[in-house]
Amino acid sequence: MVSNNEHNEEAEMNREDGGIAGLGMHPLPVARLGGMRREYFERMTDIGTASAAARWIADLLPPWLTWLREPEMKPQDLDDEVQLMLVTGFNISLAVRDAIIMTVVADESQWDEGVISRFAAHPHDKDVAQSMSAMLTAAFEEPESDERRCVRVVELLHTMSGRLPAECTRQLRAVRAYLKWWRGDESALHDALGVLEEDERVTLAAIVAAAVTRHVYPAHAGRAETEDAPIAGT
Image (cartoon, rainbow, N blue to C red; front, side):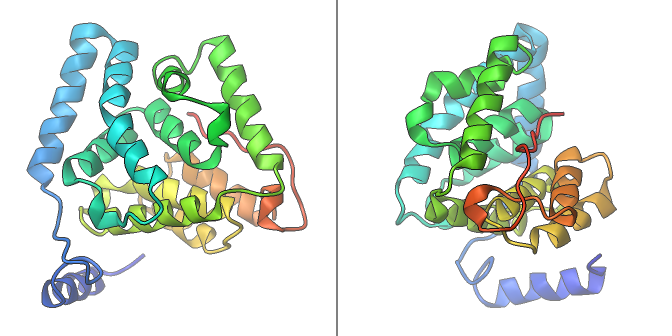
């Protein structure tokens, strides 16, 4: 685990070079993140878990997909409000988190916004669960993938994780570890174990750690062994 002194030194370096990783990006507003969290829970109380997730993903997908589909866009090109929506969705709803993962790893010809919305809102419906599983398995067995898209999202999540306190970014960092593993990057194990050291309940990090330890990778990663695609979920 990184020491507090190391965190402080990194923070000081970021202040000196004009922001996170020299990008001129400053910490995201934690107070706004707290407000979003309350808003999400209020929606859950008012309209139910499924409808709250559907509404959240409906607001999130247009700006997210615009950024994702434009290969020249950098982390700083994604609006802070959208970044906070991603963190909030990841932290509250694993289904929202997994739906966003699918936009990165699954071939875009296999889904549209309606499909992703159903992944987020109704993950336990039999047809939805089967559809997600089949789509993920197909992507896992595909000999080629959109490497650039995955790299960009890993870079984005790395930048975002540096803009918030660590306790707010465990799911974010678990997704980063998953996408690193998806590319065949063994440093995913370090990331996953770092999250588990903070909170052993982050099951996505445990899935990544187990997969790397067993040398199980997607076909396109060029590794020796592949098995069934690990499902994120709970």
